[in-house]
Image 1 (cartoon, rainbow, N blue to C red):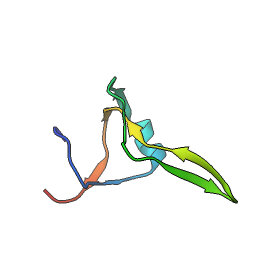
Image 2 (tube, rainbow, N blue to C red):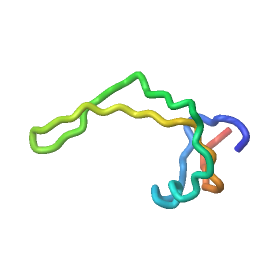
Image 3 (cartoon, rainbow, N blue to C red):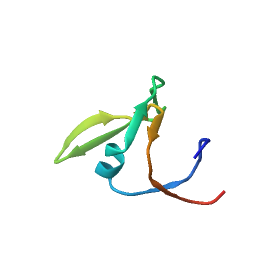
Image 4 (cartoon, helix red, strand yellow):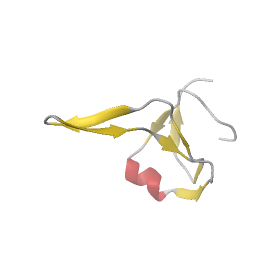
Length: 64
């Protein structure tokens, strides 16, 4: 891919993709929404974020 895509499906396992990371950018951004993750009455605040990544190979599905 040569440009950002939206609503894509990434196909593979987490370990497979993590092992194929070649470069990590310095542009870490966090999402605006936060939530909680928990079990058995315990809760911890969570959010998501990721810098730009260069991944050597992966299967991507979706529509243009």
